[in-house]
Amino acid sequence: MKICATTLGETAGDLLSMTLNIGYAVSSLILVAVLLCALVSQLAAKSYHPPLYWLVILLTSTAGTTMSDYMDRTLKLGYANGSLILSGILLLIFALWRLSGESYSVSDIRSRKVELLYWTAIVFSNTLGTALGDFLADDSGLGFAGGALLIGALLVLVILATFYSKISKVLLFWVAFVLTRPFGATFGDLLTKTHEKGGLGFGTVGSSAILAAILLLLIVHTMRSHNHSPQAS
Figure 1 (tube, helix red, strand yellow):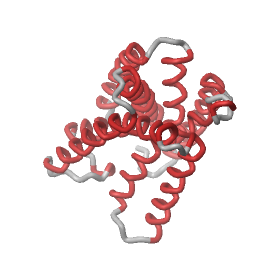
Figure 2 (cartoon, one colour; figure 1 turned 180 degrees about the vertical axis):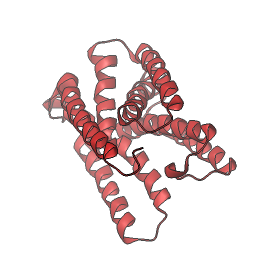
Figure 3 (cartoon, helix red, strand yellow; figure 1 turned 180 degrees about the horizontal axis):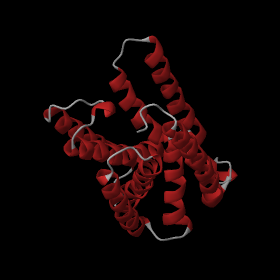
């Protein structure tokens, strides 16, 4: 679901900023405003609501796409510099989280302060993922498919480490969480770009529609599973 949401965030962000030609700055302002509204609702919620939660995840990814593109392209920082800046910000967020004395485990979020740190980390990890994915696809020479394969291979290693190693599951969760975003960025570009540019040519509209339908089906499945679980009440 995270991979689907982050890939949709890439295609939907490009749909708004490039296909509809709204621009990175205006698109970012629109998406951040919508994200803040959804986030306020999420923070006010007393229990887990899959549609609301995944809407916020999707919006962090979509806003992260346009914000990263604004930094890297409009401000001309470049993908490498943008990735370094965003990596520094993400590390700072985790340092503040550490100083708070709270666990990094998302299962142990018990206070508003930690939940804010959690969502801030997600926003910047998704913004970083776009810059890193673009760097792998464009500047590294791997291309869209090569970048997606590289990140996909790293995710497989994380999965193997989860089941067959003693590495902290919390650490592996956050590694996987960060890696899904550049995977979504490269895979999203692979879906939308033309054949001449090394993509599959589905376009931003077609790719976004397909990914939105898949994500919606997964959310419905999650809601049914959650409602039938012993802890649902």
